[in-house]
Length: 268
Image 1 (tube, rainbow, N blue to C red):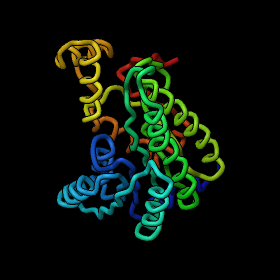
Image 2 (cartoon, rainbow, N blue to C red):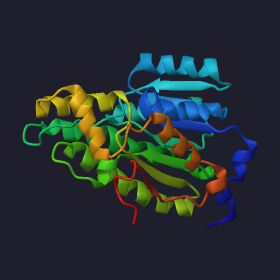
Image 3 (cartoon, one colour):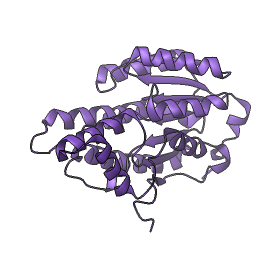
């Protein structure tokens, strides 16, 4: 690993961070965490109204510039347009956070194949496309990539097969990309959050309640009992870890998979 990998360049420039899925949930929390450190932000998501609201909120609270582009990252065209927009308006970035990609749960035998296609298109293929497009700039700036993946990448569940399959593929891709990062000076790490208090968790619990014929409150209690904790993970906890992984002072933290799941998966 050469000396330029230490990240000295970032000491003399304002950090610039691209975040997919950055208009709500974990992505928004990550955007706010970096904004607290006066990093400029570029948000990518599909809902323009949510993006505009997040931009206004962050700029009203912090000394940052926030740009965004509304695009359907499930599609090749959406990714290409987002890439063009970033390269035109947000040159010399150093950090890329992947937080887009809510996959659908359901009974495998009843679930349409399109759910699998959409899951891979948004979470996996968009990350592949953006990584390839942004890699030269990240390499030049000795930057960082953090993938917000999911605990289901190594916890197969017959009612969450889309998410499990996508997360497993995404995790493998991220770890392989980290090995290229050793050559090109880019830190690449992955976070596997457990059940996190977001709109998506509400949907998952509601689906579980309907499938099991119980109330939402009982389904929520069952979910907490399953993870063995008294509360769910917060987006802010994920954001704090994501920020830590992009700290120039911890450049030897690369190629890692961190399970932020309350200890559900034993560390060996």
